[in-house]
Length: 139
Image 1 (cartoon, rainbow, N blue to C red):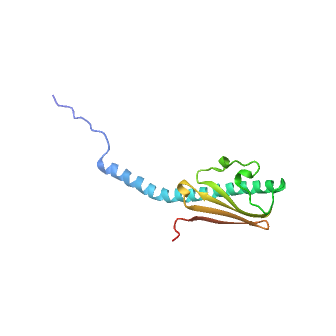
Image 2 (cartoon, helix red, strand yellow; image 1 turned 30 degrees about the vertical axis):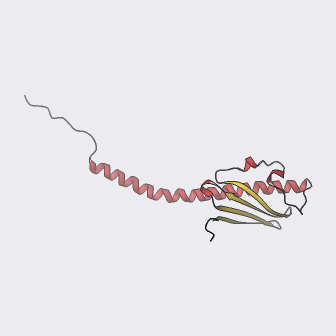
Image 3 (tube, rainbow, N blue to C red; image 1 turned 45 degrees about the vertical axis):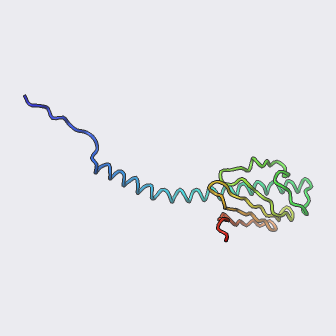
């Protein structure tokens, strides 16, 4: 009687190496794309927080806030400091208030955004943004 040959099944080393190379190439392409999305998410979160504070400033002024003083975030109507805590920004500071259409708000980053700041400046109703720069690099 003839012995039956056992059929071997599985992947060869060459096949496994080809798959590993393909996965490495896909990762090399995907990582920079995801990094850009993270930067956009940071900017969006900071802008949303600053806009929330800006709305609070307008309400504060309507309710009799003095333009000669600068309120703390906790003094703004309808805003809790805990409501402003996000993934990237958790500290917002009102730098000056010159009226309902003139003020400056700075958001300071945490976590992946640590050392970054985003500033919203409103001068006579015109909004300008600056920031998302590292503040740790100062010498």
